[in-house]
Length: 277
Image: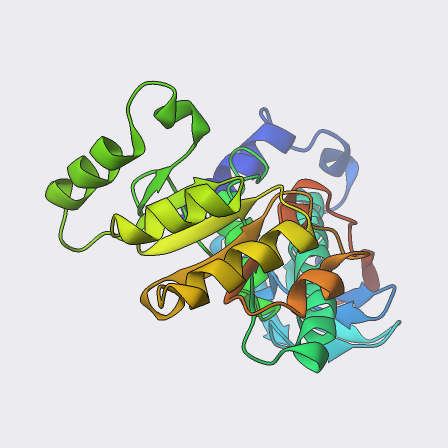
């Protein structure tokens, strides 16, 4: 499935072939993909699979999830120059985006771990269309939780659902729909959190609530001995700048759209070092 998606990216970049490479002789080359900054690399396995599909030999010098320094070689390539250049930009785009996500995830997760070792950092569905599997994998490589891949993974009752049906009825129907899928309820105040927990929600998601409001809700859940029945998640409005304030609370998960919706690309380049024949 991943290879099929990667090949679609190549087709998008070269729908009728690589016109410029047609001016080159049919020779083999040795090339390197090099990190142009420090960080956590991801997407190397995908790039390797793509190059090998086109007959280019690949030797990985680093592995997904490793921290690298600027100018370190990530992989060596040996093969036909036209095939190397055909795949070049797609491979660099995949590595760049995935490494950017992995680097930020690792940085945020380590910050949070210092103040609360039990809190997990999770991604959201705010991914680039067509890139979700890769975006989510990059979060995992960086040390974060994938959360849900799609609408099919769990039952997440949000405000737009509750505009149509009551919370009690929504949870009742959700529980009868599946014994295996968790029921998550998005709440915006302490009262809603208590009600959702009492009705049997598995996860309470505090949505766009400030630290004081969440702290109050948790205190009430504990007071009514409901805290241990549910997982507590914070979502909405969380950034790298304010996440420490949220991480100090007694919660289990903090989900951040920022991990994947505002990706800072990791700088990598491909350099041909030698013509082999």
